[in-house]
Length: 407
Image 1 (spheres, rainbow, N blue to C red):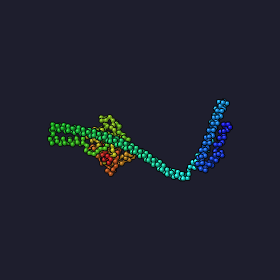
Image 2 (cartoon, rainbow, N blue to C red):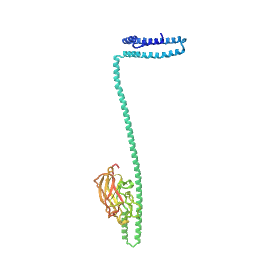
Image 3 (cartoon, rainbow, N blue to C red):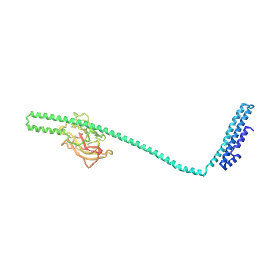
Image 4 (cartoon, rainbow, N blue to C red):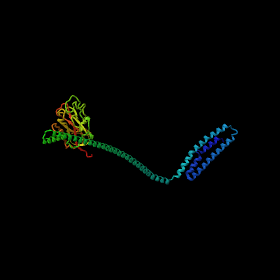
């Protein structure tokens, strides 16, 4: 028998559809012990056949090596390899069927029940574990994000508080510096007053004026000096540039342009350029140091450094005695004071008043007390002046009131 016929014979014997396989399957279904013994016998039989085939192949190769040429022996060996592979592949279905039958014999009804019970117990436990781990992770993540947001929020607040503290310290130092300057100026003014009074007293002593009249003259001069230099307004002024008050130039009338004018503050011998609107926020009041706008009607909007509940306003002008033109026709006459809403700009009328030029140069006007509102912007609206058709001069405007509770 040739090698190819031998492989074919063995392949037909190992096919799953052969009579021997049918008898094997029948015997396997009768019991697990018989199936195991039969499977072992079949495996030994296959091993015996493969061994016999290998021996026969080697024998044939050795017997024919002397007679066949080397090329034919190599071809025969190469041809045997696919046959072995085909035989191994053909035996796989048979081995798979045997394994399934063995597993079927091992799995009983009681084992199945136990398996499903264990499975029913394990599934909820596994699900609960996954749920607990997921919820714990999500909670930790949420807590981490919340703590990070709180930390950033606190850092922002601390930075804002530190900036406010620094700004407040700077303002305090500025106010202290201004107080020192004011005290120095008061000392200089008092020195000048004493010097003038001493000079007047010496002049009176050298003259022929009786003693009683000398005392009366000195007293009159002293009272006049007090009226000129003393400021009897003892209320806080929130419209001062030194504490942070500014002018809202977008809602303020334009300054008057210099031209051929006559009057108290725009004569060519006093100024070469017009003063800005924030001149009215400074305490230096002397002829020419004012802000002027064209015509008899105009307005200025003052931004206070804090929200203030306004109670009164003070308007100051120079007197006729020190006016270069000898009159005060450019002084405001009728005016209105309004509070402006910081967001909407809505106006709240706080009162309408009249500045009387023939009386004291510093006049205070009480605002409506029933309008208990806090404002940052105060509008000073001039409705008329005392007769100057070209321009109106405003020397100083003060805003008195109380700060908010947070201050």
